Image (tube, rainbow, N blue to C red):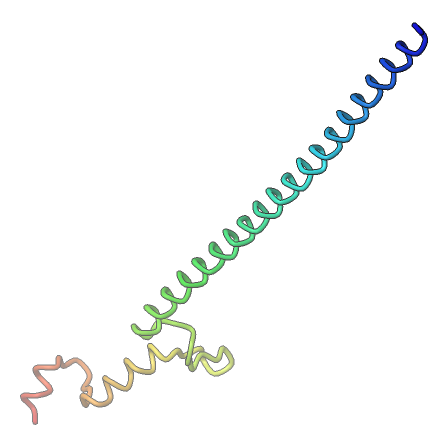
Amino acid sequence: MAFLLLLHEKMRLQRKVNKLTLRQLQLSGRKERITNNISKVQKMYASKQTQLEKSAQLWQSQMKNSIYNSMGLGLQNQMFNPMSGGITSFVANGMAAILQQGFKAGKTNIDIKDDK
């Protein structure tokens, strides 16, 4: 009879160990899924941050180029050709303004208007 009681107690304890092992496996799988989700979200936000930084840098360079171009100092729509003397649109615009005013050597803008 004592043997049957011991066997029953052994089986009860074994069943308890099995239940706890199953619960441990379930929780470790859940922990692993949550950890993977957290790492995926962190990667997503890191990529969005780098994308945002690149976008901000692009906007900064576009603004700088826009300001330069509005003043005639930019590189877009330039006539710059090093083989033909290296004239830029800024210099060409200055020369055009001088030619339109009827530039006379050694005279200021006021003197030119007085001559006419």
